[in-house]
Amino acid sequence: MISFPQELLDAIVDEINDASTLASCALAAKPLLLPCQRKIFRSLHLVSHEPRKPRMRGALNFTEAHALFTGAPHLGSYVRNLTIQVPVALTDLPGWNLALHSAQNVERLVVYEAASSMPRSILPPETMTSLVEFLASPSLGRLHLAEVRNVPSALISAAMLIPVVSFIHVRLKQEDPLIPTQLHSSTSVPRLRDLTIMFSTPLPGPCDFLLHPRHPPYTSHIERLEIRLTPRGDQRLLTACAATLKYLVLDAILDTSINIPHLPLVCDVKIEVSVDEDWRLPASLPPILSQIPTSLPAVETITLVFVSDRRFRNVAWIGDHLPIFGPSFTTCRELLHLRRVHCELVQHIGIYAVSKHTLFDGFVQAVETSMPGLEGTGILTCTLAAPFPSSYIDRLP
View 1 (cartoon, rainbow, N blue to C red):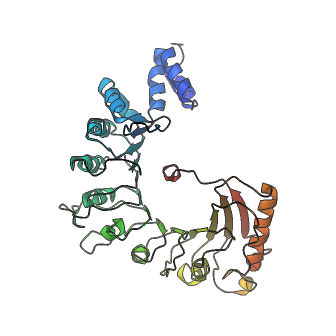
View 2: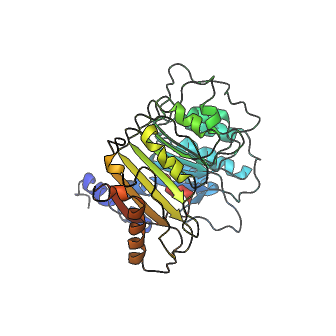
View 3: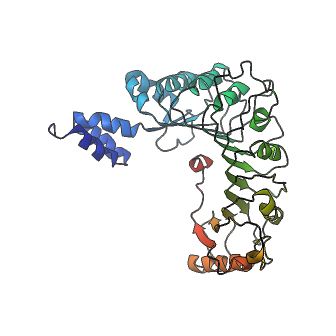
């Protein structure tokens, strides 16, 4: 085996995706040890130790992580994808701090707070301080914060130097001012290009921070924006990104109306909507679609994702023509750049009253009936999509 080129061994190991096989290969021969370790520790998931609670498969608790990086500190340099739970106990802090100190080449970071974590809000400020310092890593290109409370404004400020950022149900620290003690210097130009903000709350959130009048223009270079439609904050954010926005994802699961401002560069829009047990669309969808010709004049692709958590019974749930896709579509002078309208059906419950083939045929028929103006144009496509992952963490890019 010593005669094999190391590059060939590295390439072989790179094709192995089973963790137990990689662990066995690491023990088989010395030339295989490092490439196997690089593959094993490329993605790392760290959680708090909670008694009587089953641990997520493949995850290490902070005590194990502390022992791991203490005994083999070089393993931290292999981590590229780090998913880490906010500590729930003071005993987790040594592992949390050592993990952040050791993993200095991370490209994608997910930080989340478990919904059942108890006790909460007992951690010292140094917990978030260490995270703020970690965000300065030049390798970090994606940051996802999910279900995290008491986030200091300094952390949101530090996140603006990362190209892809998601805030999923993130709440700012209430006693913390929206303006951090140290604003960006003139040389710290915001790098944010892709922003997701979901589950807005009445409390101050990331949107309030981003749009604060005394802050740098954090939104001035955003090209992709994904938001859940709510009356508070979303319109301001859309308006702030109007000059650069090209890709827009709207989560309209909540039945909320909103006015879309003029977005001249948006070429791709995706709208996710939910249907109830009677397969009725939310009342907010037709008004949203009717705004597309004037608000998104350059749109080329429209994707409509219909999501249901109900049992399939009948798919003939669209009765009226949807706006802008009626019989007069081919003669109108709007949406001249439109090249594709794609409709996806997503079902979370795997209980079918009919076969999937019959289900999909009914869906296609319902969609075509609601969009008669697209018949024969080759623009309309339909698919039956796989269910979304059960965990929101698994949906993050």
